[in-house]
Image (tube, rainbow, N blue to C red; front, side, top):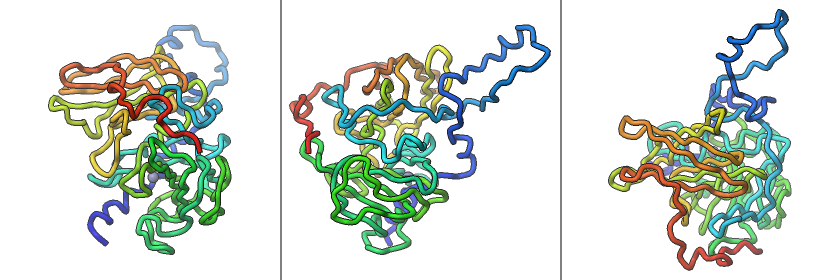
Length: 352
Ligand SMILES: [Zn+2]
């Protein structure tokens, strides 16, 4: 196996590391977590402590497990958006990307970049086709391209080639680390059809679904951020950014904080993509995406050259809010680059 292959081997990720447990959603609802210690200290205390939830310290992700129903797919408010996929896990389970294991992240060593998102659904949870299409691969050996190879890092995996494409290119979704596959090669599936069960086969330290979106080619090097392809919950939106330095170079693995106003909790932290085998959206050219944000005003903060940089953005329901950061102009809430003919409405092929 080549050095590259070895590196990439680990890139198929492995969540459920110690400490992840604190990220597992609890019954606390997003937005409820406004801790106001100073206020409660100032008010007289009742002799009997009222029942109250003990709220965890705000972490990288809201502790809520609740999401509104998703927009129907394909969902695309602007001609540039392409929320063509449903979630591969049903709404009665965790069905959003795990904060620590986003696309473009690095978990084990430099240059090992995550090419999908990890969804922390329970072992045995049904895995659903994210869109209609044909199962073109089902079994061991997706990464190594050796059918039946039980040491393949993706474990038991399924590939669907979708009935629809994007800008004339084929779209594929990948489902990895399954405990069982129920779909068979050549089968046509509709959105929501069960294709297998969540497991921990392959290079992983715990059960989860590794989910990828591939465009153009069913190749490890053709992945794109699934957070730009999965329909948001209704009333929620997606923050997309492009952060560059004084030379116009993308800043890799830069930490950004996103805080909803006015409470500033739950705080979310997101890193820009690492350099490696990940790709930016053909249109947004982003190096950061954060989905599942309830519509509203957010404060975005980061450290740049030892200074705090911050600005405010509005997240709109069912849409992408796009910003750039440059050394010269700082944060800019800009419309994305001027559309070319390729991006005019109607050229995206969302139809089967
Ligand atoms: Zn993964």
